[in-house]
Length: 141
Image (tube, rainbow, N blue to C red; front, side, top):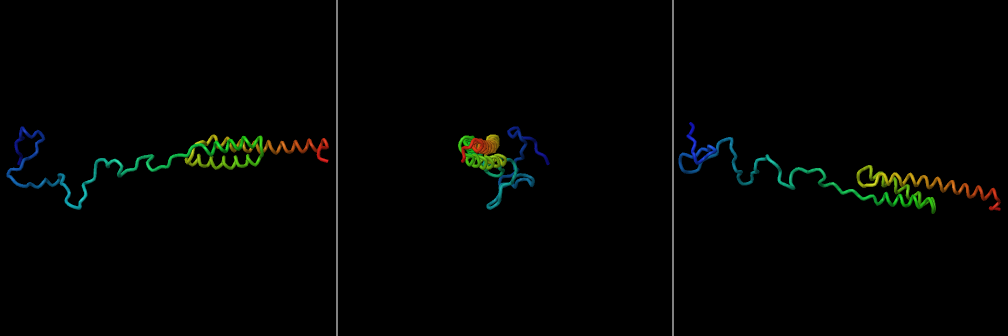
């Protein structure tokens, strides 16, 4: 049975014929009773439900370890090869952290251990030349 559309009700909702309480239609929305959950659907409330990309991730460290490694490696060229060894170790640690996404400065870290290896090679070459030239000239008698 259809009712004529009420001009005051543009959406065509049916009005109860008699006063009193009317049950909602079987497919409609019913407000939940005590202890029941609202039906799911729509979007979750902000801050609840889905995790968005980037939420809960730790921020990256700065390139401090890589910079320190590069400084040690460069200082090892002029001072002592043991400082270069420290630069190489710190450079490898910083490089691995940067590759894993925990820190920045992957290029600086790579430069640090390359310069560290070159510094050790230059120090060894310097010792060989110093003692070789010194022994050849009779400085170590």
